Structure formats: C-alpha cells, structure tokens
Amino acid sequence: RTRKIVGLHLPFRVPLHPDRECRRIDRPECLNHAIGCLRLHGAPGPELQRGARLIDLSTQTVLPGLMDCHDHIAGTPGDGGDTQMLQETDAHQALWGAMHAKITLDAGFTTIRNVGSGSYAEVALKRFINQGLFPGPRIYTATKGLGITGGHADINGWSPDVPLRGYAQIVDGVDAIRHAVREQIKYGADLIKITASGGVLSSGDSVHHEQYSEEEIRAA
Image 1 (tube, helix red, strand yellow):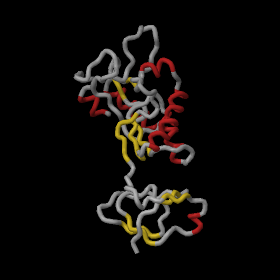
Image 2 (image 1 turned 135 degrees about the horizontal axis):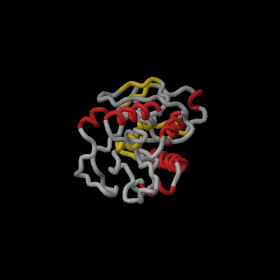
Image 3 (image 1 turned 90 degrees about the horizontal axis):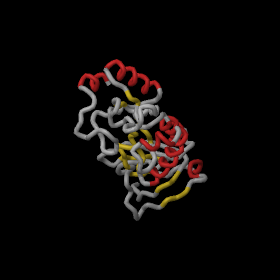
Image 4 (image 1 turned 60 degrees about the horizontal axis):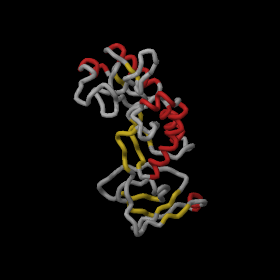
C-alpha cells in the first residue's frame, strides 16, 4: 500500500535518481537521499531501524538536494583569492573547505562543482566526505584550474621581486596546457576549469578580455 513519506535518518545511503513517475521502493533504507516521487512498500527491518532517528515529514514538502555548479569551497569568504594566497597556507584552505562543506550541506546543497582552488585541498576533502569522515556534499572538482600569466587567475599588481604562484595553475601555450591538464587529472580533477577571460575581482584585466587563444582552449 502507499503511505505518506516519513523520513528515517539511517546510517545507510542508497542513491536514487530523478524519475517522472513514482518509484516503488521496497524496504527503504534511506529516505533523506531519495529524489523524486516515492511509493514506499513496507518498512526498514528492525536491524536498520535500531539507532535510527525518526523524522516525520508527513506535513512538509520534501525538497530534493540542490546543486551548486560554481563553488570555491576552500576559499576565504569575501576574498577573490589574492589575500588568501598571500597570507594563508594550503592548510588554511583545507580547514576552510571542511567548515564550508558542512555549511553547504546544511543549506540543502547535496552536490557541488568546485571550479578552482589554490591547492588540492578539496580533493582530500572529497575523499574524507566520501568515506563518511566529514559531513559535506558530493564534490566534483576542477582542482586548481588553468589561467594565463597576468590574467584573472593570476595575482597581479605586486612587485616582480615577490614570488607569487597565482590562485590557479598559471600556464601559457598549447604544450604547457596539455601537461597541466594531465597533471591535474593525475591528482584528482573530475573536470578542467579554464579561465578564458578576465574577471571581476582580479586586478589588471577585464571581463571583456580574451585570455586564452582558441588553440589553447582546444588543447585543454
């Protein structure tokens, strides 16, 4: 028979995918990860209910998990990247990421696409979340991303005597871009971020400036 949805927060995860038609779920194991219209047949066995917390959603609207397709989860709030790279370390980025991951999940976002980071901290964060060690959303990460010398992802306006690595991996030319893409995939990138134009928060460029050539973009 069909029942009203009553949420059970259980230590099991069964990912479901959106479906236009109601889906029959026999012996449901996890409702807080369910997406779409569900018909629940039967209840979880006592071995699953032991230690579970009952969440009665029968009078509420159940919203599917949201997706944030442009995130910088390891970034410093309110900073375009320059100050973070000048004053903080990769360890700071890892800690910012862990804190933001819980905030993001609590806000209803169960999946994010992280499109640029000053380090590989969010790769480690993703692994910890997947292992159940930290609370957080599913992360698809571009790791460092790619940017040109003096462009949107670089740190500009400082003395040339101050060595700065940029917020992204700074690479120019077809061969260098191919190498950088292979390197980022090697270290955990799910996708490649290309900073193809100028930006808003960076110094010395404009959103109207083309920064990578067509040949360079195709190489990526």
